[in-house]
Length: 402
Ligand code: ATP
Ligand code: MG
Image (tube, rainbow, N blue to C red; front, top):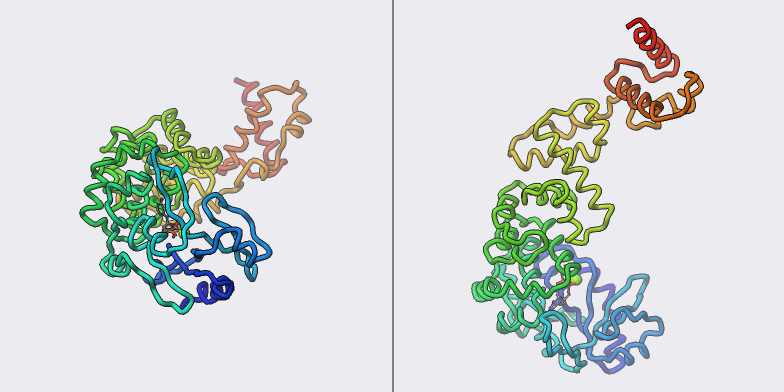
């Protein structure tokens, strides 16, 4: 068993010693069978939340209404969830009723896909009533039970299916895929925040091209913010080389490929409820991507874009054109040779300017600062007060002569 499991085994033993059942479940069991690295291990138990609190003196209620409590053990937080069934789903997204139960099998049955419905006991033995292991071996995403019913209960599962395609490079089993293609409209009932979580995992997954194509094929795109009716735009994204792109670069590329003007781009990202700071970064990369598609980098452009943005814009040009343009190392070098990297490095301030010229403060100060900044960046004036002053004096004399 992998270390994250063995480290948590004492928790299972404590719960069992108190007379209940406890197992590892969900993503960690699936990923360990796949030989993938595992992060957090989730535990499911027959003990009720109150019964767990009697076993572990220090717990936090993270989702007590769903039967989840948090136990810190050796400094590591573990989510322990009471076996439960769900029923109702009159709104296609949240169960009307959650019922705690004592049966592991019933708990596994409420889970989304067979690969996610495998339990492992403290000795490493698998409890796998829905043949999840087989699905993992054949790399298939299959709902537990009837796919139409399961997607009808919680439409987010459709998004989860596609994000697992991206993360695991699995395929969606035929019946499950058919159901998905028949009911994309149910996604309309799902909160943007929940779609965003799954969509971002999909974007950054290693098989993102394949997953994005499925979003188009199944019609899911019609129920995602800002993509409605834009199969072409999403397909353009699916055809790009997405390898090695960061999350922000992927958002920028998507925004570019769906063909939005600046105002629409900002609206698109706000509809997805991305954090304001990220929206700003994405719009900045987009602006410089558009610049770079028509121009080469100049010193001034590199300075104004900043290093990170320049590198991002360049890698996106390569994704879009398929051409290997400047290498990252070349761009680093180009940028690092700039005489200054931001205004604070300029050997001049507004106050100094005011002391040189006997003029009242006004917009001219900023205008001059920018002018000198530009001259310094292109190497026409050295970045030192004496040189700058001399240059300014020469300009003034010239102005007076003209
Ligand atoms: P990840 O590695 O991304 O965390 P995961 O499979 O652990 O993947 P989680 O969202 O952490 O996904 O959910 C944990 C488990 O809870 C899943 O493996 C699955 O068994 C169950 N689950 C999560 N979301 C749903 C859902 N919408 N419907 C049914 N079961 C779900
Ligand atoms: Mg998980």
